[in-house]
Image (tube, rainbow, N blue to C red):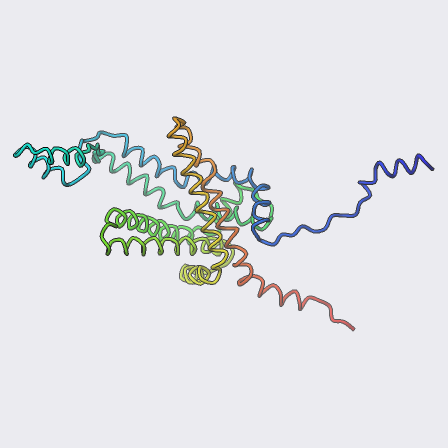
Length: 318
C-alpha cells in the first residue's frame, strides 16, 4: 500500500484534469502569443512575399548603379558663383561654400529606362495576385486554421484571378500616387500651402492603409464587387477605429525599429543590416494588418449570419 501511495504521488501529474480551453480573444496578449507560434510560418511566407518588391529593388539598383553626371544641390549655386567670380566677395565665397555642395545624379539612358519600366510593369501586373495569396495565408494563421503556404497561396490566386488582378492595378497606382504626392509636397513643405497639402497627403495615405487592410481579406472571404470592396473598406476604416489605431501603431513600431536597425548598423559599419528587412518586414506588417482587420470583418459580416443558423439548428425543448 505504501508503494502504491508513493507511485501515485510521483506520477500524479498525469492524473490532472484536462486544461481549460485557451482564450482566443483577439487582444494584444493573444497577438504576441499567436505571433510566437506562427513565426516560422511567417518567415517561410516571406520567401513568397519578397517577390512583391524584388523587381522594385532591382529597378532602383539599375537606376543608381549606372553612369552619373555631377550637379549641385542648391539652385542658388549659379547666382553665388557669378557674384563670387565678378566681385571676389568674401561673403559670396562663404555662401558658395555653404550652398555649393556637389552631387552626382544617375543618367537615365533609353536602355535603363526600358529595363526599369519593364520591372515596374511586372510588379504592377502581379501586385494584386501576390497580395491575395499572402493575405489568404495570413488569414489562416489569424483564424488558427491549417496553413499550407504554397498550395494555399496559388489556390487563393486561382479563386480571385480576375478580381485580384483588377484591384491590384488600382492598389498599385494608388500607392504610387500617394508616395509621389508625399515626396513632392515634402520637398516644398517650407511654404504653408504645400505644407498643408503634405499633411493632407499623409492623412489620405493613413486612411488608405486602413482601407486596404480590410479589402484583401474581404476579397478572399466573400463574393463582392470591387465597388463594394472599396465601400466596405471605407466603412470599416471608420467603424473599426480602435483596432485600426492599434494596427497603425504596430506598423509604426515595426518601421521605427527597422529604420533604427538599418541606420544603426550602417553607422557602425555593418552593411548587412541593409538586407535584414527583406527577411521579416512584409509578413510581419501583413500579419499585424490581418490580425487587426479580420475580427471586425467576422463581427459585422460573418457572425450575424452564423448565429441565426445556430439558433435554428438547436432542438426545441419539450
